[in-house]
Image (cartoon, helix red, strand yellow):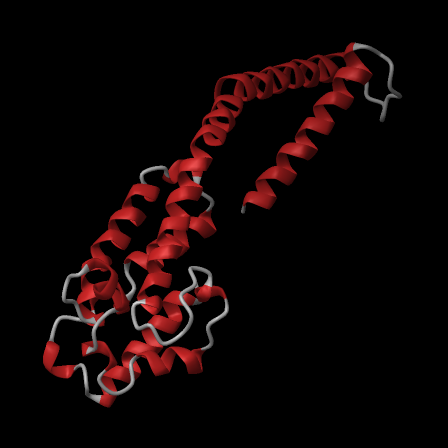
Length: 208
């Protein structure tokens, strides 16, 4: 839809410039012959002037201020997006199975994700409990961090008018990810069906 709109505006602008050059300035060749040419030319010229004035008005009043504001806000969006990435990576690092790496979500495979939820891993002590001195299981850490992920998504969506459709879609999918809401019952953590569900939903989250 955006491509069609841009194409329409581009073609309309070219036609308007041609009419102004042909009728208004008489520097471009005329096309066609009509007994009512003067009236037609005047109408087309006025429409072209109005269209061009509208484009200039839009650029200075709407488009340019929006782009300037977007450039100012972009570092905030980038920082918060990186924060979400690091929080999701922390879910993996919490298990302390693979080398601690905030970039791990770009390299981890589905087969490696499944190992995170095997056996009693969810109830095992989190890597972060060792460095914080607070007793905490991996499931506890995920529950603790979940709200921070959702909060950060909400903070980015506050700038929705400066985001692309694709960015909004990904943020909405993160916010609605089932993985973030699976850890409500401690009695199911060892059930294979639950572990498979964790693997499936976390794989979807990582691959967004």
